[in-house]
Length: 115
Image (cartoon, rainbow, N blue to C red; front, top):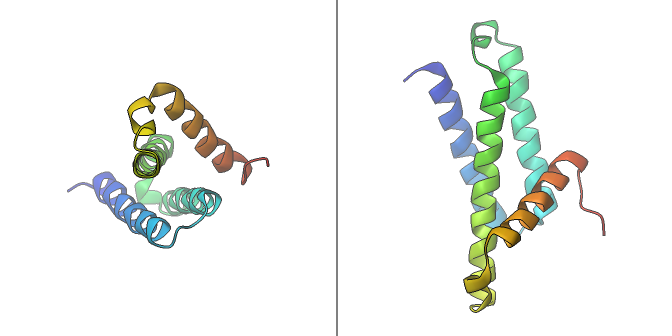
């Protein structure tokens, strides 16, 4: 296994563990997203402080980890909506996905969603 695969895999495992805690403890979306941002910022710091990792493009790695965290969060939103509103699950689609992805992105970049 090469270095980038090890780092990516490690962070995906961390995100999975945190995501499971988010589900088990019914954490607020804001807490989840802000913690994901902290993990990704920590990843950037790690790469910058380890010269031997400078061959890794941090933007690509950050994008992969960010996308992964967003997708597993979106899947859990879909599952929750389907459970709570069985008929809504049939209409959940691109438009709903776009709203929830916007919601996730907004929290990620601003720290909270306006009330």
